Image (cartoon, rainbow, N blue to C red; front, side):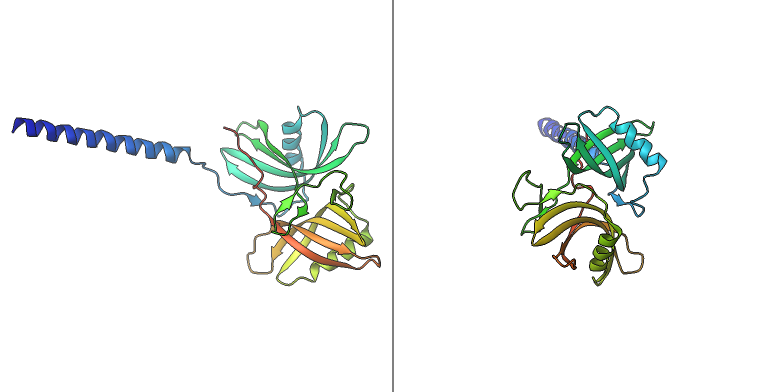
Length: 235
């Protein structure tokens, strides 16, 4: 009988210890889950305010070899501090000065210190499966990064007209980020898309517009962007 009781007590103690370990493991797992919410696209993407510019300059201060100029503020993510996403134009500090467009992710802690999370070149080449790839330098007839993110007023009016013919959403051009010479010109535009429904939340997308040799423009494709998709997080 005593042996039975001893065995029973041992089993109960083992179960109790195991239960505590499982509970502790569950607590560790929960504690290790990110406290952050999702990324919030910025409605005022064109507003590189003094505060946002200060965050950008502080985070990029030690970066050498490439000059990055912020074009748009794409959004933020609340963590123990704030993550920020910027669209930038990058220019290599070399004689030929080739340009690129990238997404810069910065982390601002609660003390105002800013560090780089990720700098990811913006993929602009549409694949048949709806995914995106980076342009190949020097590829004849291929996509390349646009030298200038802005347009003439005439070009912008034509592009906006092509975008506004769409039903269900309004499109605002953020920047011209890519081009492809064909029998005419293909352009890749970063746009802000706002669905035409009550309380709609805007998001960002790449809109592809073809302009023929007579100057007529038409929208050919739109690929939505998740602004946080290229962000990697430090330990």
